[in-house]
Length: 359
Image 1 (cartoon, helix red, strand yellow):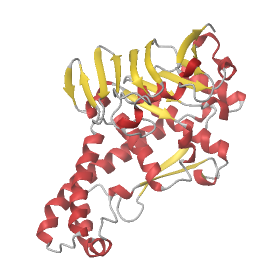
Image 2 (tube, one colour):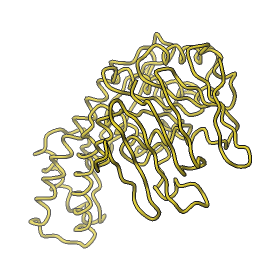
Image 3 (cartoon, one colour):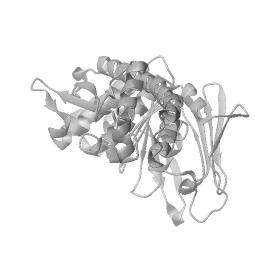
Image 4 (cartoon, one colour):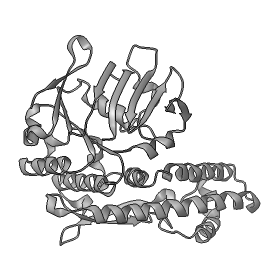
């Protein structure tokens, strides 16, 4: 068991919530707007970054309350707290000591699937790159720090480009830093794709895809720092004209084809695109079998037929990762039987509350 206790204060629709969790899947159901997804979002804030809705910290506070918000959790043998006072960015403490957000990734791997991700295969490359980097972060906890180092150097280079600075001496150090961090980013992404691909299993009722790291525009698949630095230098005149860095690891894309006809994911049916996405999320959890993992699946059951729903629940119940799922009604989770806990969320008098129901 990874997450043993979750306590919320003034987070989204919850003035207060205290949950004790065990290793059973938790099926959370209730009407739209009752606060189900807010619980999942709170758990996602136990990972580095902005969580499953990518919201700014001030926007996550309960409306009408000026006290900010707080999340406390027991993760393995550690006490974790993340909080965002009014008009301040969020902070993290682990066992009472201040810690960077990146430290959360070493305690708990948080994987999620939400309805907005259904457009992954047809959306812009940036969306797939964010998905790939989230997967990569779950496998390599230092991936976020490397990405921050790359982005910082690129922002400084972009500032020079925007100001039309042409002196090459200003660029060499920045391009060297981008090249070192970019090469590591690319190697991490390629290794993540390899591990996820190996962890897929079509026998579970979900399609297995062939995944590739696409270079996008230029050299986003290059792993040699010297080659990356050379390409950045060669691209400098074009980048100066554009006022920004047009190519590099920040332009990578994730490609996927599946089936004997190697059907591109973007050309598949809506149902198959959803099943393929679920396949990758489940494979991500399997690839982390030796790590503390929690899987968050928001409104996923309603989009699956009965057979795939049963196959999904069999997989969830049979793997060591903890799992929280949401849906509008308890009937969506019937195939779990007694293997899952069921929590009913309601919002009487405008205040969210939760009650456990017997299976």
